[in-house]
Image 1 (cartoon, each protein chain N blue to C red):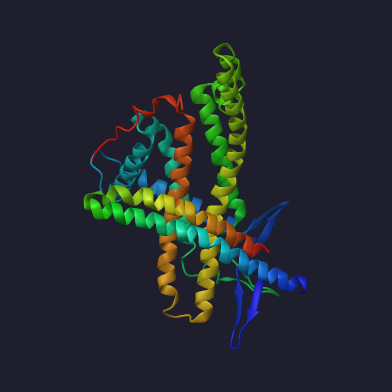
Image 2 (image 1 turned 180 degrees about the horizontal axis):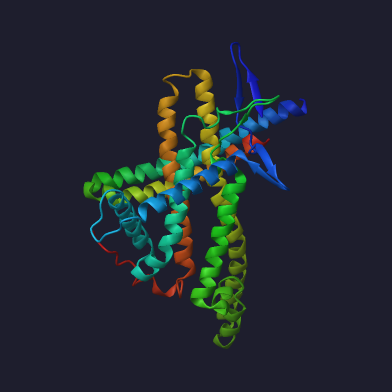
Amino acid sequence: MSPETMALLAKALAIAIGGFGPALAIGLMGFAAMNGIGRNPEASGKLFVPMLLGMAFAEAIAIYALIIAFTL
Amino acid sequence: MAERTTNLTKVSFAALAAEPLFRLGHFTVTNSLLNAWIAVGIFVVFAFIASRRKSIVPHGIHNAIEALFEGMLGEVQKVTGDRKRAMAFFPIFATLFLYILVNNWMGLIPGTGTIGLSGEEFIPLFRPAAADLNFTLAIAVFSVVLVQLVGIRATGFMNYVSKFINIRGIIWAIPKGPMAIVIAIIEFFVGLIEIVSEVAKVVSLSLRLFGNVFAGEILISVMLSLFAFILPVPFMFLEVLVGLIQATVFAMLVLVFLTVATDSHGHDDGAEHGIEPSH
């Protein structure tokens, strides 16, 4: 395999594998938020901002993987 | 500049580094820097307009500004807990939030990325400021250094340094016996790792904002190259939302860092915290 092929493969694998964990994390956070809203619908306003904050943190990890994919 | 040739069209996607436009002596002005200056200009104009004809009862634009500021102050107070620190941290929070927000949303105005100078390569004249790593890195470094300085000023130099290099904890633990000494040594090493964590804060703040805005640029370019008419619209909405969320996350994170740095004792008062103003 030539270096160019390996670089292309590395780019693709970086974002594919790197997106898996954050997607799971964001889904779990949404799940917890849905549970909370389901039990107590009035709390949806209070839950929204922390949920968004947590999702932005998890998404940042996927963004790191995307940066690696771009720079390779 | 990456260029791909499809069957029908030649498409250029944004390059990783911001393209230079002109030089002032040794200083290179890039298209992202131009956008950042335009955003500053927008704020200056807005400030001039907002400073005329102030009255106790707000009219027109002052209504909007007061509503915005009151909303932001409420959010800040939810994080800091007490009003004194909320008032002290509000300027930096509001500046970061509004500046990054205006820069992100300016990047969606038609003309960004498309109007430019042609030559052997197409150089766009406008590019979202946060799509340049220099911009986000500058803001991140400035914020983290500010947090350190505010922490030193609030708790005193020796107290603040002891959060990281906790030799004082070891000295205080010596009369308490071997178990306390072991714990103090472990806390010393944890403090050293906190220094690494501060550097990681700089990296994560800058890369989060840069990655989101830059990936949004690439996404819009790809969508436009697929089918230029109805397809990009939902992605433009997504970019509006992402711009707002990333500005919020950046400002909130800096606020949380400031709050943690100015807490007088970290671990003891876990029980009394948490009386939040209800509205």
